[in-house]
Image (tube, rainbow, N blue to C red; front, side):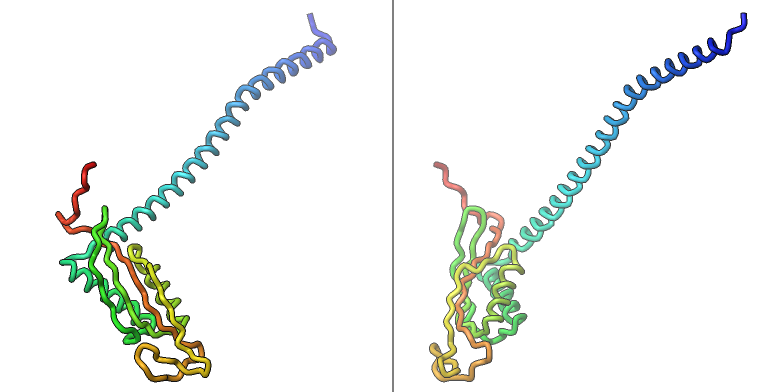
Length: 204
């Protein structure tokens, strides 16, 4: 029996409705999964980026550690170590234009600390401008990871009439436009123990 056009149309509408329902259901199930996968992928990207940042920081920290470890090691006896530090400071003074513009560089007896030795070195009567002093302090602090300026005494040598009073040596000399300072520095520098040199910790 032939179906009328109306029956065919109704069947087609029902078919579309069923197909739409099935499609909606599948989309709701698969769509949630797809969106969940996308969220997981984005989270993985964030995790990977964070891990790369941590790795980069770890590489930098390890590099600085290796540099500090190498700098802590000074070969030779205590006097030889003091002489090596003295040469480093002389080089820094020369680099900032203070060659022969200081009185003396004198090491003191090294102190035995828990993990490292500490060498103390004094530089006296540094005759410099404020700009040179700033450069000197910057170089000492920044060039070394294990050396610090622990004391800085400054005396302004420029008198009221524009002369430099040589208070420690007598006589006058013409002052520069920026003035001159007389500076004493005390510097501490860490040194790694030689094999067998590290003192044993006392048991309580």
